[in-house]
Length: 263
Image (cartoon, rainbow, N blue to C red):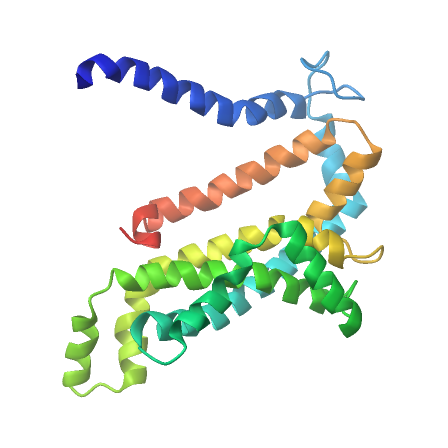
């Protein structure tokens, strides 16, 4: 029975992969177009728009801003998420379920709803159009992922290892620093990578927070697409997809994806 359905199943899987990869398969050749407007297939080929991308001052400035914000958000997400995940995953206390629900609540809300809520609060706090506002808004999105991934990573670690270290006279801080933290490293790396990518690529919430003097790369791309129809957006997309794949491949080669999120 299995042998009879294996071939159709493989065909279905191939079609699903093609369906998922179809946008990339279209964008990739478009990025090497030398035409002045989007046409598929391109009438001429070259790297004109890759060169133009690196010469566009607005995109370059937005890239450095997004890179800086994503780096700060990643560090703060880990600083907040790791202790919270450790407390929830390793200790029993009153209000534990409420704390978990509070940290993961942003995962349940659509981005447009969350962005509108943040906008209403930030108007009163005068955080619109500021770097501080962007960092806080991105933290609201990224911290739940850190908490969830680290809790999952902790669930695969046997508590007996920490208990053995405690029985040998190690203090709680020493146990965490020398036993728990190294064992949590794959989950922490995965959390850091995901937080960075989420912050760097966030566009919906950033649209509510940014202003004319403060624009992240996704927002700059969004504004560019509204006014231009040339293939430079395809070139930018290829570069961003390639960078994301490189990060994922580095994690897989160094730690393994199954270890980073728990088996």
